[in-house]
Length: 468
Image (cartoon, rainbow, N blue to C red; front, side):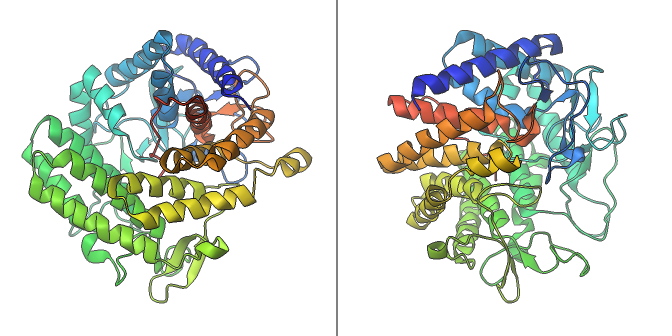
C-alpha cells in the first residue's frame, strides 16, 4: 500500500472528527458513526474483553485522543494544529477545575460533552467519578496544557496526593476521587500497580520543573522510593504490593511488564530532573537500570516467542504470557511492550532491549493480522492492536534501517485499511460497526501516519510510547 493512499484515509478521518468536534467546543466525542461521523447517542454493546466502566459514551477522553492529537500536529496542516490547540485549550481552561485538581480523563472518567461536566464511566448519572491515569501523559502534552493553563498543571500535581490511601504508613492506589476531598479507604487489595507510580513521578517532575515547590519534591522522592524496597532478588516487582490469597491472578505474582514501565518513566523523569536535582536524577537512573535488568531476567523464551506478563515471585514459574493479537482488559499484547523496549533502547542503547523488540517483531511477521478469521468469525480485535504493531514495525525500521520492517508495515497497512476503514472513520475494532476512542483508534491513526511518513523518507511524527 502506498504512503499516499494511507494519508488519504488519515485526512478523511481527521477532517471528519474535527467537524464533529465543532459542536462539542472542539473536543472529540468518543463513540461515533464511522459512516457519518455523528456521535452515537445510544451506547453500542461492549466487545469481549472490554468493560463498560472504561468507556466514554457521550463524552471526550483526552488520554484516548492523545496519539491522534500528536499526529494532527505532525501532519503540517494549519487547520489540524488549530483544531488540536482548540481541543487542548478548551480542556485545560474548562474541564480541569475539579475539587481535587485531578482531570476527568483516563480509565474511568471523561468530560461529558452534552452536559458539560465530569463524566463517570462507572455510573452514567454522574456518581463518584474516579481518576485513573490509564497511560503515561507524554511531555509534549504536559507542555501544551501548561502553555494554556499553568494553574491546572500545578493543581493536578497537588491532586495526586489523593492517590495515597487512608491508613498507617504510605500506600497508594491507582484510583482517586476527582470531586470528593477525601482519600480512598484501603481494601483487601492495594492496587498500587508499579506502572502507575511511574506515571505520577513523571507528572510531578514536570510540575516541579515549572515551579520548584518543596511539597512536590517530597512527593517525587516518596513515590520514587516506594517500590525500591519491595523488589525481589531479581529486582522484579509484584503486580501489587498487597493481595489476598483468594485473588489468584495477583497474589504472589511478579509483573515484569509493570517493572519495565516504571523503569522507563524513571529514565524520562531523570532527564527532566537533571538540571535541578542531579542527585535525585542519578537515583532515578540507578533504580531504572535495575528494573530494566529485572525485566530482561524474567523467564521469557525469545526463541520460542514466549513473552512473560506474570510470573510467580517465589519460583519464577510463568503464570501468564502476552498475547499476539486480541488484547483484552488486563492482558496486553506483546507489541506494546516491544515498542516500550525501543523507547528505553533509545535512552540507554541496551542491545538486549532491541533484541527483545526484534523478537516480538518477528512474531508479528510469522503471525500476521488474522484477516480470514476476522471475516469469517467477525473476531473483535481492538484497533489499538494493529496500531501498536504498525508503531513497532515503524520503530524497528527507523532504528535498524532494515527494509523488511517497512515492507511488513505497508503490508499490514493494506490489511488494516480493508478491515478497519469501511467508512469515513476507522472501526474501533474488527467486526463492529462504530468508531470508539477507548478501543485505541488513535493508535491506529498514529501508527499509519508514522509508517507513511517513513515510507516517504522524512518523518516529523515522533513515536508514541505512552502505552506502557
